[in-house]
Image (cartoon, rainbow, N blue to C red; front, side, top):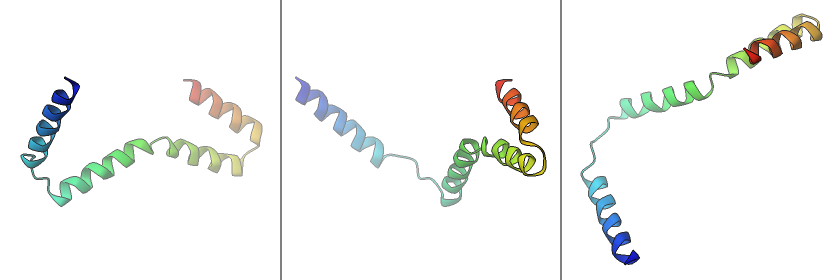
Length: 71
């Protein structure tokens, strides 16, 4: 019984791959760029905290960063 289900799902997957919509190179690149951009959005905050920490005393920077992250 489970072999029948696996065979059916396998054939469905093969049909989906064969009949899939062609994606242009620029569209794929745009999608990858947006995924990485959204995933790395938090790095902006980290860079800002490091920049502040290098030019200001560490205690106010750490407390301000902690407060910002809690909001």
